Length: 322
Ligand code: NCD
Image 1 (tube, rainbow, N blue to C red):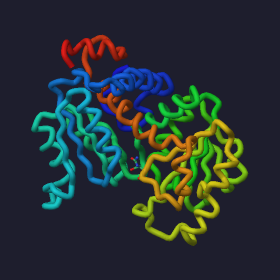
Image 2 (tube, rainbow, N blue to C red):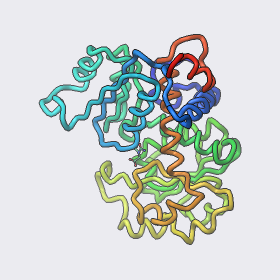
Image 3 (tube, helix red, strand yellow):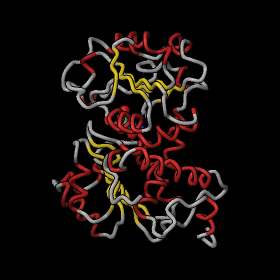
Image 4 (spheres, rainbow, N blue to C red):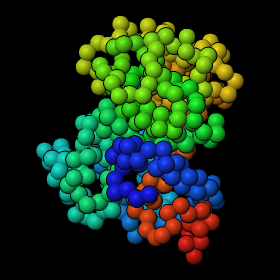
């Protein structure tokens, strides 16, 4: 598979493309488990991150991934840049590209911003989250984590619980999970669902307690307060009572069920403090797998050579010395 940019899950062209990334990720997971978790696959390439919104995990994860592939990294954060002096997104992107970058990882509060950047620059563009729209690498690492825990996604019942309306993670997850054959149920009060779900391959429930016993995966979302322009909930406390994954609710989950969250978590709101640390919770695995998934994505976009899915051995060998 060859792709020029990764802007949405659909760019991977369905289940086969997603599976290709997951298979490639296996090789990079092996690499990250070595004593020197670095391969020369992208030596001489430069990856820039262009983040217009806050981030802990995603930004560090992409930068770690690029470094482990021996790429150079450049980091741009709005708070300390000329954006404060009025520079436009287009001029900023062109300026970064002029310094000689091969890939730009973009996060922005406006849906579609990475698509605009991809139209302006020749470098490969990766969407690291755009407004309410998509966050494709999050969905890929979520698929990888579910596959690691449960063997695959075909036939699984996945509940995505919470603020779906404002969640780019939910949009990418629904696309990826359903492409891999899972049945997705959105669980939220009507005010936290998108106004129209036409074309979404999902079921909807407003009652977590009813659907919980049948869940293979419970995927919790943070309340995106920064994107809410009106009061969508009576109180957070009421949300927690009806939709929070409490200890008592977690005990009703099936033995093999997995609890996930993209982070940042608000412990005590969508997830009880202690539930996030239970063995069923895969939240730290998600973060760990994120680095290998992003190595796979950067390698697919920038790696050259006939061998598109190399083994970890081969990746290390290519080095001579890693
Ligand atoms: C998410 C995001 O920024 O879209 N976090 C992440 O990337 N892991 C989810 C969130 O902010 O709640």
